[in-house]
Each structure stands twice: as C-alpha cells, then as structure tokens.
Image (cartoon, rainbow, N blue to C red):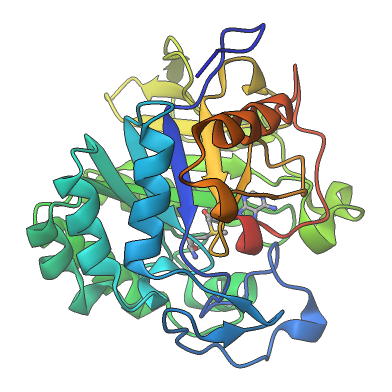
Length: 326
Ligand code: SAM
C-alpha cells in the first residue's frame, strides 16, 4: 500500500478478539456498567449489539487479505479481554503458520495461569500484562474485581514458560499514583520491563479526563523520589519513551498527551466485527468484510483508515478502548 505524506503505513495490527472483558477497570467502564456479567463469547454468537463475533478462520482470512496490501511485522491480540476468546491458542498458531514474525498478547492476565503453556507452545512471542496496582485494595479500586493474586500468578506462569513479559500500568491521579514505586519495585524483582501510561481521553472519561490525569512529568517526579535516571533514545514508531536508572533498571512511559507519537504511528486496528480503524482518535470503524476478495476496494478502505491518523496528537474519542482494542 502507498504510504501517506508523513511516510506512514501499516505494519502492526492490533486485533480486538472480543469487546467483552472480565475486569471493569475505572478508565474503560462507567460505574453504571461495572456489574454487568462478563461471559464467554463463542465464534459467531450474537453479542451486545446483535453483531457477529468473528471466528479464527474469519480472522485469518481477513489477515491474509490485508497481507496482500501491506506486510505485518507484529500482530497484537487484545480486546476486551483476549483470553476470553475460546480459540486463542489455535489463532496464535494460525498466525505463526502464516509467517507473522511477532504475535503478541495484551491481557489482564488473570486467566493466564492455565493458558501460558499452550500459548507458549503455539509460538506466542510476548505478553503485555496490564497491572495497575500491586496493593490488593487499590487493584480492586482500579479493576473492580478481586483478582490481584490470579494476575500475579498469570505473570509467573508466563515467565515460567519462557514468554517475554512486559507490564503496562495506567496511572490515575488520586487512585493509583501511589503505586508507581511499588509497581517499579515489583517489575525490578521479576526482571521484566514496565511502562507507565498516561490516562488517555477515551470512553466515559473523554470529558472528565483532567480530574484523573497524571502526566509523564508527574510520573518522573515520583520515580525521582527514589531513583536517579537518564533518558534513553526513542526507537522510531515506539509508543514509549524509556529511562534507565543508575542501577541499570529500565522503565518506560507511554505519554499520549505529553509526548505524542502520532507522526510515526504504524498501527492498524481491527475489531471483533471486522471493522478497521487507523487511529484511536477516530471511532468510525470501516467494515472490510464485504471486500476481502476485491483488491482495489480493500486498498481504498485501508487508505481511508490511514487518513484517520492524526498529524500530531491524539485528540480523544468517546469510544472505550474496550471496544476498539488497546
Ligand atoms: N483486557 C486486556 C488488558 O487488560 O490488557 C486488553 C484490553 S485493554 C483495553 C488494553 C490496554 O488499554 C490496557 O493496558 C489498559 O490499561 C489500556 N487502556 C484502556 N483505556 C485506557 C485509557 N483511557 N488510557 C490509557 N490506557 C487505557
């Protein structure tokens, strides 16, 4: 496919396998929906808006069509909660059989203990665990579920199975900003990379975002109370900036507001109903289900998605990350 004026095209795909989740995190879910029952969607079962969830074969045929237009270095499986997708292991295997160099997962991790070995055997290349607190009460406050221990067990299971692990922690002012140092200590103790995320203006917090916003600078000030560190050079198209402490520990910050990274963003998103999105700031999904065999129509829609990308900065969206895939 043709690159845009900033030289951007797609070479990373984020695939949302389901919009259902088994946590109800403060930043994704409004209080009024926090107790709705999570359930296991099966392929093609009607869920929420009466739309069809795609099966493994359907995801694979969409990806094969996309591969005729652009090569994909990385496919990241996300959601909702991707471990709720019942055919996750066969999907990982099918993606590796297609020759995708990096197939990785973003998960809250609390079902990982029983899936880590089969995911590793299927060829999964890495897992980003979302872990917003290491204190049980604050974990509950952030996720509205009592699942800290299961999540930590999931991280251990991934490590025991030789899977490359990273931790992502969204920081909300007044809720879990006192967890930055304990989370960093935990990551150091496990010898895994950690990235702190600035809260993004999305979903039900699109308006109230400022009340909870804890900036990159605030995060650095917090870490500076315990560590001396230096900034490292940013790798092109990376979402995170990285620092290294005097002791040699690295940490990252994904700062959508303070250090936007739109100008070399190479990500394409596909939701669980077959709609593509070029940018998290744009909640108009473009369906590609009807044009998988029509190369010129598909190229057109990929170009439409590429045009959704912001020039400079993420502008926010009323769509929750849970729907579009984080
Ligand atoms: N359920 C999986 C998980 O918890 O990792 C995957 C989906 S979740 C939507 C993916 C990522 O999006 C998580 O790391 C989550 O913390 C992040 N996220 C969701 N909403 C966000 C927001 N408003 N600002 C920053 N990060 C957000």
